[in-house]
Amino acid sequence: MQQGSGPQRRPLKRHDSHVAEQMVERAAELARDSHARTRHAAVIMQDGHMLAWGTNGVPFPGEDHCYCKVAEFGNHDQCRTHAEQRAISLARDGDGWERLPGAKLIYVRLGADDSVRLEDPHYCPRCSRLALSLGLAEWIFALSDGLVGYSAADYDEIAQLRW
Image (cartoon, rainbow, N blue to C red; front, side, top):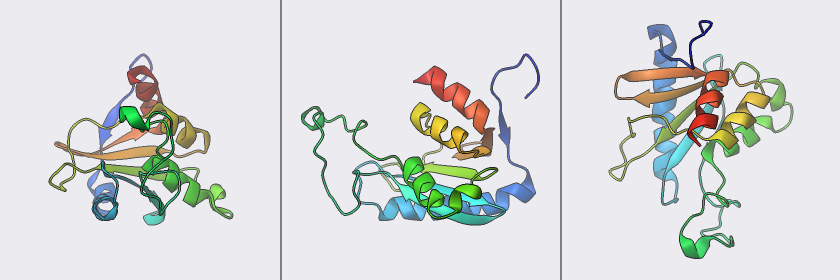
C-alpha cells in the first residue's frame, strides 16, 4: 500500500488467478451443498493447495437450528458460525496453525439462483481480526470485474470501518 493512501484492492495477476479461480469454483460447490438459508463458503489455500474450507451455519454441524435468544427476531448473525471461522478453525487443527501465516482466504457468497454473487465483498470485522491475528496474508473475492485480492491488513481496515 502506498503511504498516505487508503486500503487497496488489487486485481489478481494471471498466474495467481488460475488456482484462485479453481478455489472459487470449489467454494461455490461447497456453498451449494450447504443446507444453510444463506450460502457462504471460504477456502484457505497456501502455495496453490487447499488447507481447509468452511461453510456458514449453525454452531454445531448436523444441527438444523440454533438455540439463540434472537431466533424469534430472525437475526442469527450472533449465533451462526461464519464460513471463514470454520475454515480457519479447521486449518488450525493439529499443527495447521503453523501453515496459516501467508495463506490466502477465498470467500464466496451465492445468490438465490446458486450463482456466485459478484457485487462488493462481504466485510466481517470479527472474521477479519481472526484471520489477521493468525497471519493470513490475503482475502480473495470474485467480483464482476474479475478476481481481486485485499491484503489482510487492508481488508481488516475496511471491515472495521464498514461494520
